[in-house]
Length: 430
Image 1 (cartoon, rainbow, N blue to C red):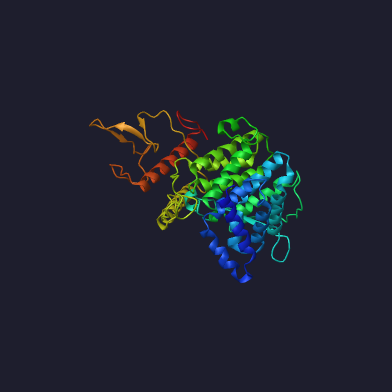
Image 2: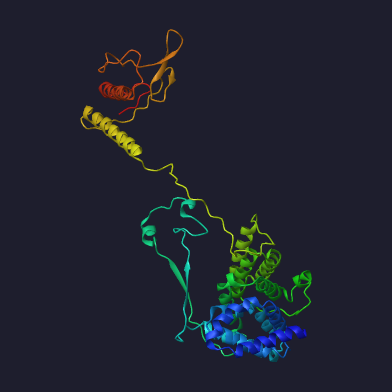
């Protein structure tokens, strides 16, 4: 560590101790103007045997305990580097060099799991519903949803998932290490929009190193650090992917892509379904997305596509015209059935299958016979005598008259069959 960086850190340590309580808020706002401070603190954290590591961790904890949001965000930006220092020391089995880092991380964890009154905090998460619009979808673009009784009963209800209460921890063990680290990453992801590009790069490096150390991919990444495999959990990888997704969409395309591939590589080896589902979903959405590696300035946000809203009329929409047409068809069918029952004394008219008739069959049951001029005309003459219904010689194609003629034909044929007592050729016997 250079003497200049050491001087910057020592000045920072002494400056905060002399501040009165009334000047803390203005001091927190002025931290962003100290450009040389953050790189110097990163160097201190990376050097596990530095003499400044213990006072730096102590002051960072004082920052977080002050309840000033700006000071807490200042501490959170170093969280990925602190996590890697802890995991690397644990993998090397040299816990004596990480005691101050463990105390800092446990202090942040114990502060976050309780509220201002000291009661255990219960975190709640609302699961998005497809029936309500969001920045990711619109219900009108999905399609019509059937209004069943169950859908109406669940309409407007939101599913809420709760996390907690969490137990306080006094030291790290093999059983609770990743439980604490996962919760700390959750706090880090809650403040992603305030993180600096250096912090996002540190998060991507943490993700890659944790996932590939001790595996063949470490040779591909040309990382010559620790060769020991580190135990990870499914929830820990999901929190890493959440931060990587934000880094991908906010300027860190190259490092974010490598980190996402490394996390998916480790999730496949461990057969973790949750990281695979989340990581592959993010990877599929990045295809074709306009991500610029030099877009590190301006508003920091995740790019999403919003479907434009427009008024749409369904093809099956119920209108006054369709209701009126449906009513006419229903009344017409009732009148025809009523006249048929009256002609037979209330008896239903059976269907008569007519066969053996010369000429071409028409869809309505009439036969076609040739005209003198060579064209075919429908056979509209009555069978066996004068017709009871007078019709025009040209047989108008009116739907009402056509239905009446066919009904009279059916009635007459059935009556003739019943009078003769025997079935004629091509007619059904009743």
